[in-house]
Amino acid sequence: MTSHIPKDDEWRFPLDERRKVQSLAVIRREALKKRIRHYPAFPEHIWNQLRFRPLDQWLTQGGVLIAAMLLALWLRRENTGSLNSVTACSVFLVFAGNICLNHAARLFSWHMAELEQTLYLNLKQLICIRMLEAGIADLIILALFLGITGHNNTMGIGVTLLYMLVPFLWSDTLYLHMLVHIRSTSYGFRSFALGLLCGILALFPVLWAPAYEPENLIIWQILAFAGLSVLIAEIYSILTKIERGDHICLN
Amino acid sequence: MLEDKELIRRIQNGQTEYLNKIAEKYYDDIYYFCRYQTGSREDAYDLAQETFLRFIRYVDHYRYRNLKGYLLTIAMNLCREYMRAAAKTHSQEKIPDSAAWHGILTSSETPHADSRTRTSENAVLLAEALLALPQTQREAVLLHHFYGYKNREIARMTGASYDAVKSRIRQGLQKLGKLLDPDDFREHL
Image 1: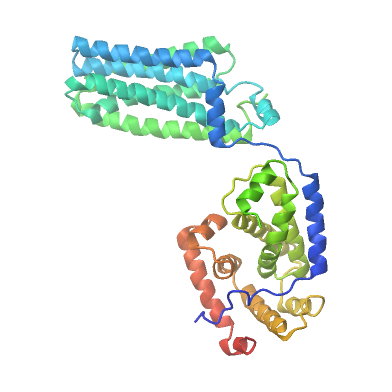
Image 2: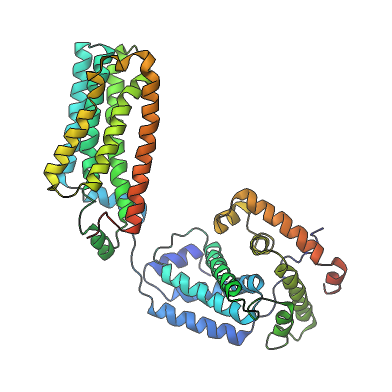
């Protein structure tokens, strides 16, 4: 049916050489005027982020990791029950998450968009890299808790993860939202106050005795799903705002 | 001849003279695409030229994968804009017709040798048949049958799903097969 449709070079025909030469001359003129600017690729951005990361950020994150390890070792030595371990770890994870995320928030500063335009930075990529760093640090802490305190855990890894991740997810989302939208107070105070407030949220399950009862597991599952959805929506909203350049990072 | 990857590396290192090499290398391919896609001789030259001008504008950001595919994607977007504008203004002279195709080949493009004449006549028949296809089918058929791209690559270039591309190619080739009368067409081969 289609065998007679021309292939190879049968469909090519001679061009008007005069017109082609004219076209190529226009292209040549434009190529002469062209000045190449260097736009770093994503791996180069990652390398630059790590290279120019301030010392205080390395020290803070290192301190949080050491504290997580000490807490996990202490919980193991004291042989606390599964529930107590999970509660302590989830509260710690919330605070650690907020401290790590705090570094990403530094990019939501005034004049950052102007800086981006001047230096040809890709702010979207920079924020993704910072959030990726924070996420990796949180995962390491989570793995430390599960690895070190897991030997006397009777709840199972799925349930433990749920109890640890739900407060973390909601607190992180709320913290991210506030960092982006509440911008009137001074930077250090704001971060500390918001981190503390969001961390306190993680204590709610501790204050409500039946929270960890097996019949309430469905509530945790719903909260985990809802938290994940809100976090994705929040990240999407931030990236869209960066793209449009309103609210965030612009005077 | 230098590989595309090397050309891009040199351009991005500031040797912009290699932009001309790319234009010389791919000009014909881009022109044929614009010509078959729009049917207009003069506008196809303009569209091919604009394709390379756009490429020059964005070459700083370009990450090498498939240069010809990238240029064809720019050309395809330009052709879409052109067809949209033509449809909006109801400009009849912009809407391709077979007379335009026949007219083209009487001027400086008219080949003298018999074999070239046959090729040109085949091109006219093919162009008429292609212009009878819907735009998306024409794009897919051109890229697949004439430029040799795979369905997945076309899906990436056109932004359509794999299944949509597959069906456009199948339906487009079927229609094209019916439109090109094998006997008439073979006379010229």
